[in-house]
Length: 181
Image (cartoon, rainbow, N blue to C red; front, side, top):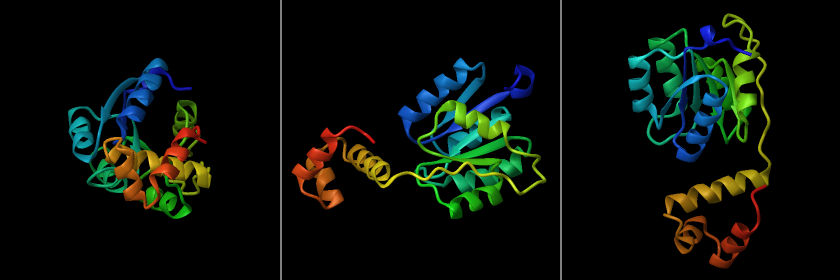
């Protein structure tokens, strides 16, 4: 899909460590040099060290959002092609991402091949009729992801997570016993 001379550095910015690590391994397995960042500040530091050819940016992160990062990347490294990755996809956020400088927009869950094709399938930067790869999450997927995030924020404490979610502890335990959608 890409030749090594076209690629340069591939930057992955996501506050979910497990996802960031898995994506980095998968992208490296396809022959890219990869840098990772947990959030805005780490991403800017990585970009200042070496301008990436490609950047995958999560929309919702701790601190400053992915949209703010996209705008900053567009200013300090305009040659970097960015794809916005989010678990909370909507047409509104897709349009905002495109205006902030994204080349494309991909919703979670997405595999590495979908992400790489988002960089490949986008027309020239001047053409704003970019096809957005939008696949909305099901309600079950959104609920599962929200429960997992709250559970992680509570240090895997089921009782505290149930209080945060406003549901009985046993209901949360039943939901957790089911497999992810």
